[in-house]
Image 1 (spheres, rainbow, N blue to C red):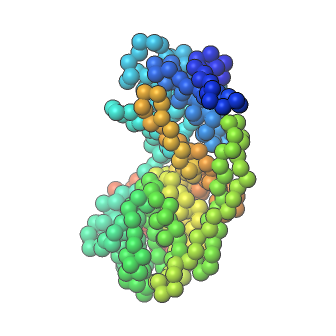
Image 2 (cartoon, rainbow, N blue to C red):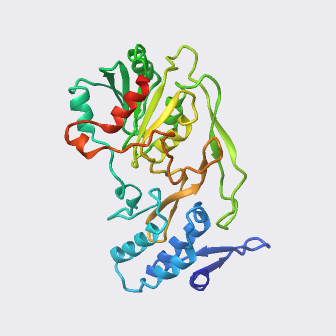
Image 3 (cartoon, rainbow, N blue to C red):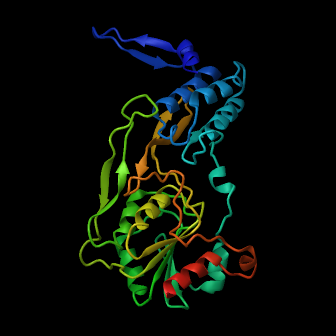
Length: 338
């Protein structure tokens, strides 16, 4: 594939300085756009080795499907199929008529979540909302917070009000099933209510060369406890997860799993730990994918998801669900009653 790229490149030489350098450009035609896409990923994508992906072989396989007079939609389909080989929900090709998206990271797994059951059978629809948080007290005197998306901002005042209301509870359930991610700032803001000192969140590396394994040394990043005077939580916590817990939500789990008194219950998360990289093809299509790997506080990759705490892996029982019972929520309640 690299030979095909080299043949198709148009090399522009900058003559304004003595030490000239080459700038690689691609034609705005089907083959040029395809090879631009392949080359951008080849240089900047960060999980080839971890996922054991032979990008050269994949490029050659899909290049054979590209021909000069194909339509934009036909080209988009080929490019999307190629990107699916990465098995990465963070990899998206955007055009004016569609956005490619790899769905099998969650679609091949049980959903393990039914919002209606919780709203109706556990709260009789008498729950409260504060910004992006839905919350209430279960009949076992256990607090419940649902955070549907880390893209929804939460204010410090919102957290104070919610945690104050739940302060008399014996434990807390944080339900982030079906949370597809969002803003890492909201992750830090929520984590800050469960720690008492500066806490290592994990490590980040950056690509520092064109090779698939050219990365900088990982550097640490931390989260600070909430400011003095804010409402904190020091009682037991169970975080509920499913396969659709992804990206920033996956990052939240990667931090919470190491906090004393916290357990993760449910199913393995969907992963999606890479920091995004954005670029553009000659025809204007945008490409977004994981460009910088993020590791947890123990230096472990979470790209392929995070397993529940030992003894806390549980799926929704279809028979329970048919009777309006959330198996995973019931498990968490029993854990907090111990």
